Length: 112
Length: 114
Image 1 (cartoon, each protein chain N blue to C red):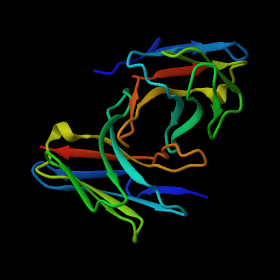
Image 2 (image 1 turned 90 degrees about the vertical axis):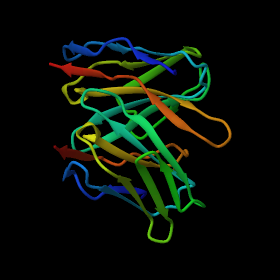
Image 3 (image 1 turned 135 degrees about the vertical axis):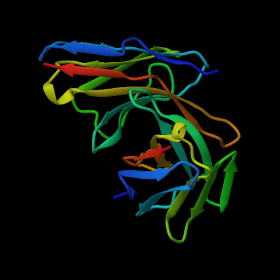
Image 4 (image 1 turned 90 degrees about the horizontal axis):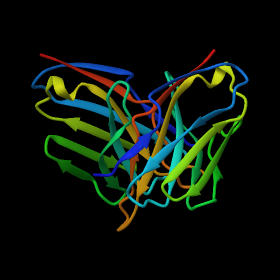
């Protein structure tokens, strides 16, 4: 069955450093993959979409890579700030009816 | 900005009650979704709808039903609430076009079934 794994439940880093979050998927090949941010008590908010034919995508301090050979996406936040503290969800397109499948998320804490 | 509005942020219900969770979106999106989110389990799809009066089961439809009488409104119904349905419920609609699909979520309803 299709499986999504976000390797770390929690990641703690110092302000100013680069945060790197990992998303691995197995048993299928998604046409694209999305990343969402979720703050406590709120719904997820869309950040980025990367397609299978794109190696890398950037948006301001965010960078996403997509390696279809490794079946992995990396999500980077450069020059991290305490305001970046949140849970980040990866969501490859897939599923039996082509819906997004969400990972369980990685909770990022950026300490000042 | 797209807005997805869920009628309640917090709900407390008794076991066996019929529960209605309402969701309204203002962007004329055709597809709408209901998820539940539990610690350690992540977001799981309950039902979705791609048109008025159309519905499809997601990964965990048991114990739930849905209603989509109007394009902007998608309701989740717990026919007889049970304690294992205590969860955060999230509604979403999806923007499509030019191959760019992205979900817009409501703020969620934290449901407690006692």
